[in-house]
Image 1: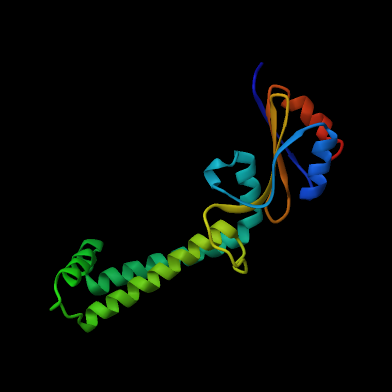
Image 2: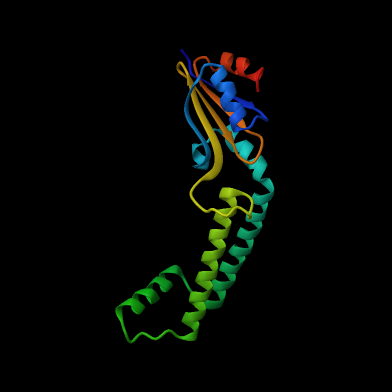
Length: 183
């Protein structure tokens, strides 16, 4: 039988979704309030859903990235420094007890630290959206249920809102019809 991939958007929360899937006699393989999924591991519809939800935060991250990019350009013009030169300075510092950091070296290190903070901030915002989330880690934070009925797999992902259900399998279309009535 041919594999099919279909989607269903819902307003049901994690517990409600679990109850509906169990009522449909599905085996719950995984249920978690918090997991991290890599953007590339999401289906196109899940990616689109996440992008729509995170639009404002992603726009902020792009603004931050633009500022960061301009700072790098100014820094390179001002100091005529390349990453190779910075690495050579670190190597010289680690090989010689006599190597003295000049004020220019200290300014360079301060700029590198500032750039590092900015890139971590951009990465954080694009992974988690809101700047108020306290945890930093890998992937996009979501709630998840993975269930199975026969050879069909159902995945429920809930980001901040607009949960999405992905159904994959030979009977995905008929299973979607059945689930749509309850979701």
